Image (cartoon, rainbow, N blue to C red; front, side):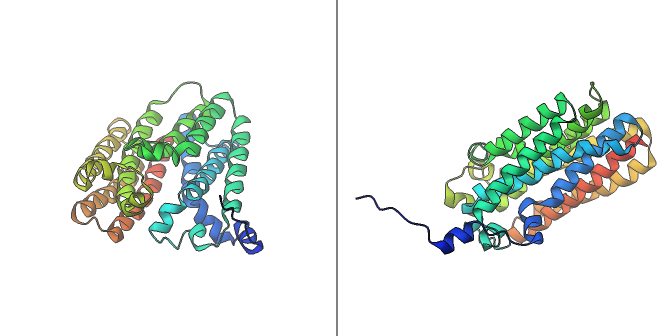
Amino acid sequence: MKQTTTMTPFQSRQAWKLGGFNDWIALTRAEHAAIVAIAVCASEFVVAKRFAFEMLYPALGPALIALGAFAWNDYFGIKTDKALKRVERPLVSGKIGKKSAFYASLALFVLGLAASAAVNQAAFAIAALFAALAMLYDPVLKKLPLLGNAFIASSMSISFVYGNYAIASGLNYFVLLFAIVSFTAGLARELVLTLRDVKGDVKIGARTFPMAFGTRATVVLAIALFHVAVVMSLMPFAQTQSVAYAVLIGITDVLILISAWRLALDQRPRALNKIRNYTLYALLAGVIAFAALGA
């Protein structure tokens, strides 16, 4: 006879546990949402060649969707996180309940789409496509080597494109170029993160790029992509001669090259975590450098 399990009152309360403010910051990776918002505003600034306070609103939708996407990903990726003993993750530690995370992510998606719909049709279409893919990431895309990594990498590049179409009907050359640069660097970064997560992914039966093609191939591809991103990032300076851009993109490129160098020397989890942080700082510096093109 098939046995049924009954949830105890304690388990029910635990599933709805709300946690504290810092727990939600950790769950939603708020720092990424902030970078997404800055990228949208930077793109608007580059396209318009001016700043106006009404340019801040279009960034709200993508930021909310980014928050929802990370919470959604943690909800469906809890088995991997538990296998890797990531007690810093609020769902693994139990600081936030699974149901709270699930419904909060849904609410963030809805609010983000509503905010994007108020911008224009193009912005809503881009936001809706990204939100749909974000919801499919863990159950479908993550199981496809490189394709899942490419989707995550696109989260930054699509922010530039979104910002462009929030205020213009045509695609700006510098926006397109920087979207490609950020995608290339982001894909390299995601390969590093999948390399870090191999042990947990093996336990849940996932099939990521390192599992399909090996550590060496992953490292070589990531390093190559880092260098391609650096070379492409120099192209705007050749056309604009912007000193501000040169300084800021120089900081970005140094951080990326340090990441590539460390990856070549050490693939242990601790080293990969440091590379994650370096590349996050590089993304922020790169977005600010991009904004300098609008000055």
